[in-house]
Image (cartoon, rainbow, N blue to C red; front, side):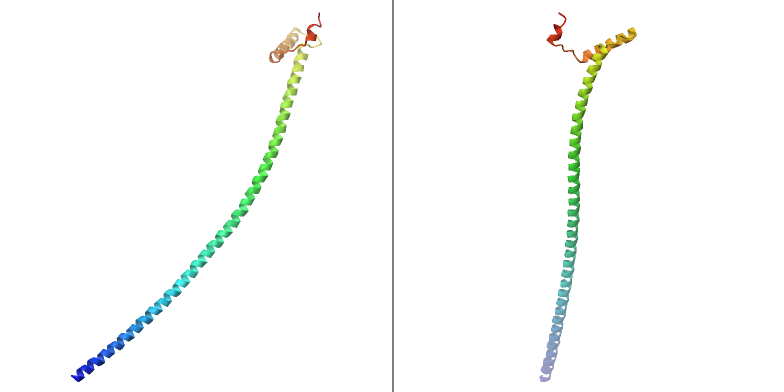
Length: 156
């Protein structure tokens, strides 16, 4: 029986050694996997930081470009606004001149109507004689004659 217990104790010790050895191998394998995972995570984090930095750099470049475009647009708007103000001033002057010229033209039309209606030279034919009255009549329809009190008593 002694031999059987010795044998069982020897095999038990071998199993314990095998078990301890396989446990150490398992721990070493787990430690190796853990280190590999840590390295992989570090590398992944580094790549992520690089991507973020690259994206940030691109955004900053985009911001700079947009700021330049904004400055150009604001400059163009300022120039256009100034040009618009000058054109408005010119248009105002031209409108005022047009009103003055219309007024002068109207005055000259009155003078022409008056001269055509009361021409000092005798007409050469009846037709031209009546044409003068027609012109005078059309002028009076548009513009009434105004007489002063002195003119009314001139013939008395």
